Length: 432
Image 1 (cartoon, rainbow, N blue to C red):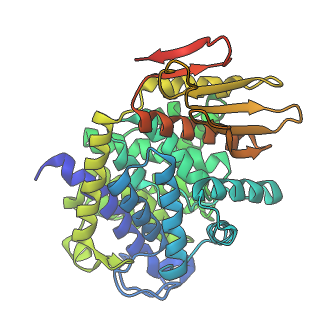
Image 2: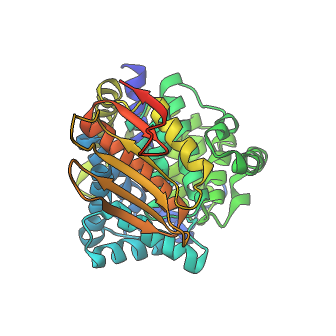
């Protein structure tokens, strides 16, 4: 079997198997003795059938299905993911985190067709109101994002953050998704477990030191020390600790999932998170045959279906990277612009194609008003600017600007220019 293909399969199957293995023991639903090997016996909070995965894998499957059909590079694709989650909430969700339910229910009630932007705004408002949006719900479903960008690490960072932000506004939730996705990517490409500490370089400088300390702590202590693990940081620590401190004499993947479940509390989620990285490093061939025979879940999928889905995600991602890659410079410069901050009345915008004689061009703009609010807008040929989002929340404005800029770049597949003044046309970056 091709090693990389085996590891691609393993990322999604490892997530599902870890999930199903942890389901029976979530919040002490079933007793698990000190030396007892966890089994896929079902039950839990569902109740679930033996081998059935829960919301962790259910939400990941939605991400994977969109990634396989559309990729995850455009705003319409992000909208489709959120729409898929809303459909899942209405028809297939067997267990939903309270934060995720709040956001998706509100987005569905609002009825906006701009699903991702609406979700990000609702998530942001929830964060402002409660200050508590750093649950583990976005980390548990992030594995397919890594498979969609095996050949495009810059876009992986953006997409992991965007999909986290849809329900979990806290930057720590996005950081965790970025870290774990890059770890899965490296494991698939290298065929070995990566050093998670090295991957903090993918995070904003201001938070690297904290994450380095948290990762080092997880490397020193057993998974049970990170209970409760509903918080995204302790969930990641518990998963990484389980990988670093396997329990029992079995093969490394099995022993590490054993440790993840024995940690207790949110057992299915911690084991799903750990399983995605373990599967990416060791391959689906390292998963016990008896697990693969029984693992299954919404929407009527089994192990072979997940193999096919994982491969289609990776294939679509590779095709996109080869033919529709957003140049790293665009991502870098767009990030540079938004990190600089905006002065009063100043704006940045992206032009999606050369200006034909006598016509205006198409633009995505980002501007700050005198009252401190931000507006992301679009202007087409001969058109009046149309507002995508107006918000006082800088991260929402920033991420929407970058998302719309990339969407426009891909749609036109022509010259991209980034300006800080539409009149004199000073260019930050240009590519023919």
